[in-house]
Length: 589
Image (tube, rainbow, N blue to C red):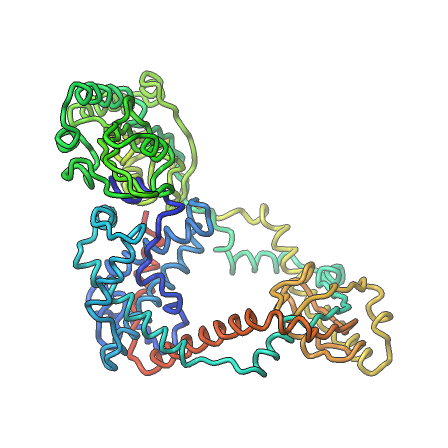
C-alpha cells in the first residue's frame, strides 16, 4: 500500500526536498531577458545556457500547487488568479536553484555521498531504525527511482550547505538587538481623519458619453466567460464492489483459520503493491503512523494472532497479522482487498453506463446513480469528491469533445467511472452596457472626485501646519478617530486600509501633537497626528532578549540570502520564454 494513503497524513513526515529550501524563493526578475523565440517548444527558460524544460517545471509546479492547496485552501481548488502566480514563482524558484547549484560546482561547496546516504536513512527511520519498505512505498507513490531520490537529496543537502554558510556569516550586535526590541515594543497612538473621495462625488457629474467611452475602452472588464451547462454522474467502485471485497476477505480469513500460510496468501491475493511481494510485511511502526482503524486493530492483537474479521478503512478491507512487538513498536503483515472490479467487472459496468448515452437521466436512475447539474467555465473542475485534481484533465478532455445534447463514454478515474452530458454551451460574451451602467457611473464619479479630495486634504494639511487651523477644527467634519496603541512592528491596524504606509508615516512622529504627512490610500487620504507614545520597558528587554536576538538574526539571514541570490541573478544570463506558454495554458481546456 502506498505510504501516502496508508500512513497517517497528519503525522507522516512530509518530504519537500528542493521546494522545502525556504531561501530558494522567487525574488523578482532581475537579470532576465524576455524573448519570444526559444530554442525548442519545451524550453521555458535558460540559465547561463542550461535549459529548463517544461516537464521539469511541471513536476515542481504540481508539488507546489498541492502544498498551497493543503496549506491555504483546505484542499479546495485554487482560483486561477493564484495559479498564475504559482506558475511564475515555480519557474523563478527553479532558476534560483540552478544558480545556486552552479555556484556550488564553481566553489566546491557541496554534499558528499556519505552525507546524502545518511540523510536518506534519517528520513525513512521512524524510531531510529531505517525502514527500507517505507522508502520503497514512498518511491512507488511518487513514481521515483532510488537514483532519482539520491539526486534530489544531493541537491537538497547542497542547497542547505550554502544556506548554512550564509546564515553563519550573519550577526546581530547588542545595539541592533536593542534597537529592534524598541522598534517592536514601543507603542504609539495616532489620531486621524480621512477624506473619502466618495463624499466628494456629489460635486461631479458623469455624462452618457463618458459612460459609453469607458465601456468601449474597458469592455474586457465586463466579460462573461464561455460556460458549459452539464449533467454528470459518478459510479463509485466502492459502492458496487464493497460486498465483493468483504466476502473475499472473509473467505481468506477462513483459509487462515484452517491453517493457510499468511505470507503465501498475501503474495497471492493482496492488492497492496508495496507489501504484497514481501508477504504483506509492513515492517515496524508506532502508534500514529497508520490510519486509526488499521492501527486500533493491529495494536489490539497478540503476537501470532490475525484479525478474525476484515478491518475496513478508506482503502478497502484488511486482514492483519501481528508478528512481534518491540517496546512501542509492532511489526505486522496485512492483506488488502480493494473494492475494485476486475477487467470483466469493469466491462460489465461500462456496458450498464453506455445506456446513459441514449437517455442520461433514465439510465442514471436505472443504475441508482445520482445526477448533478452545473455550469463550468473553461478551466473549472467537476465538483465531486470522486475525482482527484490530477484526473480533472481527463474529464475536461471528454467534455470538450461533446456537442450539446451528447453524452460521453464512461471516463475511468481511480474511484470509479464518470459520465458527462453536455446540455448547452454559452459563448463568451460581454455584459450589456445598461446592466453595468450604474457600476461605471459610480467608478467614474470616484475617479473624478479623487483629485478634489486630494486637493482638500492638501489645503487642510497646510492649514494645520501653518497653525491656521487646529487638527480638531480641520477634521471635525470628517470624524476624528484614534487607532488605539500599536507597535511599529504590527502589520495591520484595525479600521485602517493600507496599514503598512500608515505605520511608516507614524514611525516618523516623535512628539505628542506632531502632524504627520498625508497618507494616500486606496479609499482616501488620511491626515494624522501623534496622540501618545509609550517607550519600551528596559525590564522586559532582558526577559525577551534571547527571542529578540533569534528573530532579528533570522531576519538578517533571510535578507542576506535574498541579496546573495539577487547578485547571482545580476551576473547570470537568464532568458525567459515562459510568457506565451503560460498564456496558452490559461486558454486551454
